[in-house]
Amino acid sequence: MTFGDVMKVGTKYISAANNIESDHIQGNGYNLSSGSTEVVYRGEQQRATDVLRKSLDLNPKQTGNLYSGDVSDETIIANGVPTLAQSEALSNKDGDTADIAPQTDGVATGSAGGTASN
Image 1 (spheres, rainbow, N blue to C red):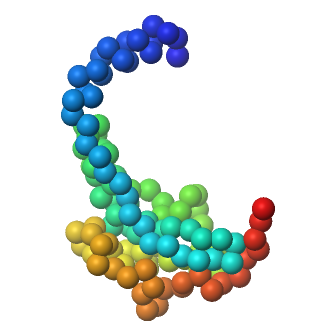
Image 2: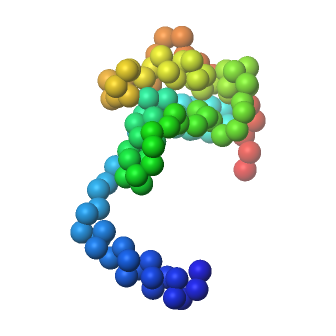
Image 3: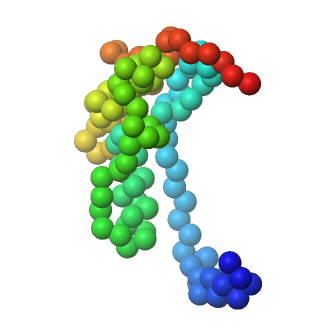
């Protein structure tokens, strides 16, 4: 960006500074042999997608992949984190995951293999 572009953005959006809303996504922690990770269940991902798309005046759309790229259920299970089907089951119909325990029956909880890397 040129300096002029930066100035244009700054002057065009300065009024937006008076209308800032804060939000965050909430996940559940999993301890893996390679380290810990936080998985954001499908309902929470969709809620965040809906909030962002609405704030940008974009049409509603289904959220993307649960994990980055195309990952098989076998790989997901081997790494001890929930599959897409498990994630959807853990998310209630409103997308609220506040009352869902991170260690739910039927969900891999991180006891699977893997190697630690530095």
